[in-house]
Amino acid sequence: MKAQMYLETMPHVNQSLERIEAWYNQEIIDRVPIRFYTPDPVLPVKTYETIKERWFDVEYQIENVRTQIERKEVIAESFPIYWPNLGPGVYAAYYDTELIFTDYTSYTVPKIKNPREAKGLKLNKENEYFKQIDRMTAYALERLKGKAFIGHTDLHPGMDCVADWLDPQELCVQLIDDPKGVKIALEKSVEDFGMIYNYYDELLKSHGQPSFGWLGIPTLGKAHTPSCDFSTMVSKEDFREFCLPAAMEEMGYTTHNVWHLDGQGCARHLDDLLELKELQAIQWEPGAGNGKPIMQWLPLIKKIQNAGKSVMVTLNSDELEPFMNEISPQGLYLCINAPSNEDAKNMVKAIEKWR
Image (cartoon, rainbow, N blue to C red; front, top):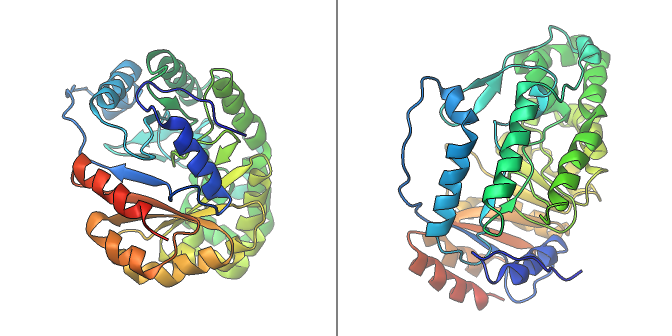
């Protein structure tokens, strides 16, 4: 299917969408997709009595996005995008779990004391978080029309959702004390996923939007970023028994799945992920601390390529040349920290010659 989208801020948008579609299939049209992180323009600062007020100020947030988009040149696949964000636990919060907001993220207050209590949780589309995401989406569709793509919020069912409801440490205990109870909670976490996902997908597509979530990779299909950060704390056996079944169920509702693989602890489960036919790609996030440089992860990246999956990696501009010298471009999506637009454009020229 040929892309036929329009953005006044990105004349080459359809060519970029086609590069991404090829990437999902481990193919290359002319070069690999590239996202650049370049310095952002200085934006106005507004003060609030509470951090939550800042998160809930829809107009201020989206007007800042609009200003930023209008001031930044779009290079390669650095799509101008917006997705409504209340933090990674917002899916769990739709079940009336409270969110506590910090400067850069939010976290949940445990809602239940044992996993079996999850059976009594009910999705509440009238709660403040669900309604706030609706407001953010509606305002973005109005104010960013023709300037940016609008995506859906962060959707995390499965073990990460259960950890948000219960508390991660308690979930570790319950995996030993009450594994059947954990499975009851897992079933609850994915029970409404298809309905919630389709609610956003149908709304956004009715406004001519492509599909994407927090990872920001637009597609004409149904994009999802499955993950299980909790898996850093479980064995391979427990990952297969508890985490994988829920993940496979959620991927059954979508067509373009990129697994967010966060850190070395989660990487122990890579072999199992590479067996999943529902999964097209891996986003490798080395994590803080000793995650850099990118060259130490070449064996892992090559393993993903050799398994017939695509892979998204982040690197600094000074790592690009040695990285290209050591690896095939097949199935790669590069996210590059670039000091300036001029540097980014020069890197595009170099990547175009990569074979």
